[in-house]
Image (tube, rainbow, N blue to C red; front, side):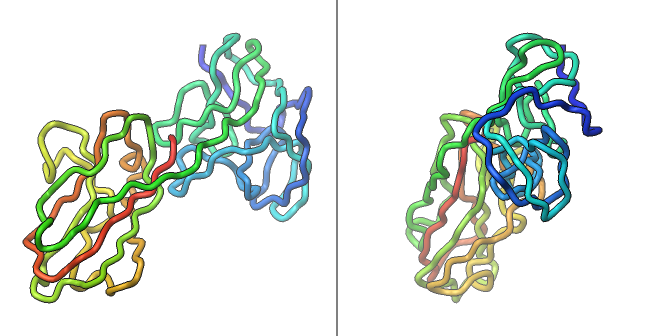
Length: 248
C-alpha cells in the first residue's frame, strides 16, 4: 500500500540521532524534512531543495530548533515493511512514490505507521561541456549521454568572441528523449529561450541563461542525451557551453 503522510503536525519522533541546531528559513512541524539551509525540502522545487535533516520540533521562520540527521517517526499510515520512502513533491513531506523531478530516498517503512528516516546524501555536482563552438563546429551535435538519472542544475556559456555577422544566429541546449533527432518538437528545450550568439552575451563574461520553467524537463533519465541545436551558421562566435548536473 502507498504511504499516507500527515501534515497537521501530529507526527511523533520516537527516536533521533545526529542532533544539530538549525535556524529555520520557513515554518515547520515535527518530522518535516529540511534542507541544509533550514527550508522545507521539496522534490518538485524549481531550484533543487533536497532533504538533509528532520525537524525535531515545531518552529516559525527564523526560529532556532533541534533537527536530526536520522530519526524514527510514527503517526503515518498505509506503509508496508521495507518500502522505500522518498522526499515528496509536497514540501517537507514523505511518499513511497518517487517524484518525477527529484528522486531522493529518505528512509524506509518499519511497519504501517512508522518510518526510519535518514536522507540520502546526493553526490557532488559534476559538469559536462559542449566542446568548442565556432565557425568550424557550428552543426547540431550531441555531447553527453546520461548513464544514470540526473538533473540539470544550471547552464553556463562563455565566449572569447561574440557573433558580429549573424544577428539571428542562436543555440538551444536540448534534452533528447526520442530517436527523431536534434531540433525535433518531441525533444525538450532546456533554456527558457534560445541564446542569441550576437546580442545575448558579452565576450569574456560567463553567462548563466535562464532554464526552462518546466521543471520535469530538467530531469534526464538513463539514456537521454544532451545536444546543441543551432539556428543559422556561425561566422565570428567562439565559445563553450557547460552543463552542471546532479543525481536525481
